[in-house]
Image (cartoon, helix red, strand yellow):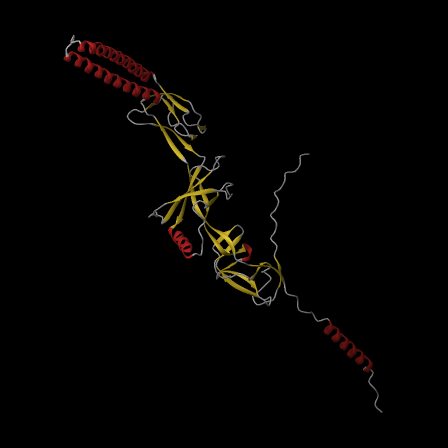
Length: 391
């Protein structure tokens, strides 16, 4: 009789443990992860004002170059450089002694002419009844009437000379023709001005309101006109076009302006059309020569589709959005979005409305994979920081 090997119980124990381990692994096998959660919005057409951001330059509302209108020596500068002045405010005083003497001489000539006219009128008055009584001849009476008319003409000439002398005397006091801000003085006390030419003395610029000259390429203008003609866009109206500004530091100017006119010709050197807008400028924030960006409302799109800016994916092949289909699977949809409105892009093609697009979480979603969509909620704007209370 053959004996049973001694290692049989040990082998049986090893086989039993192996089977139990295999069963344990089978029971703890990992399950597939759930689809990622993404935030989506359902796009829908809405009415949007179409605005273009165009370059612009600030210009003074009015500019007056103050010049010497008569020759003389500057006695005094009355204004403070860089200050605001009113219309008619005195800026300079030119030595008036010579002009005062000329005015007084003209005044004396007027007085003499008035006396001669009075004498001639009395003579005519005396001769008239004498002519009826034939005490004087007709020739003597006609001579008296002629002398009266000549005296009246001399008086008119003297008065004109006095007026001219008065104007010259008035030019010795140089005033501002417009209200505004005066720049630096271009002449000093003791300078001879107006000798042969109208010497520039200062410049006054009216800054409230103020103009902004805007330029737009003729290509963009033609595209806008075609969109308006086809009915794709509607005009905002002549008196309804609003213009807002973004200053050089990137801040939005607090007050909107109005468009005044558009030029009738295209600049041959730049291929652009000039437009002018008017803005209130009570705090003198805008200064002539500043470069700004003007946002000009030029039409209304009544069926515009807008999406949040973060929903647009920019790549080498262009722009696209991630659309969640009816089966909750992701599809990359190419779109065109060149214009913006606030924090949204205006999609000109690629979407028709009703699509669910991913706004947040699209980094976790790949085309063709399922996702769990939830409604997107825009973040509330951050409240401005309040200064700490003084202790």
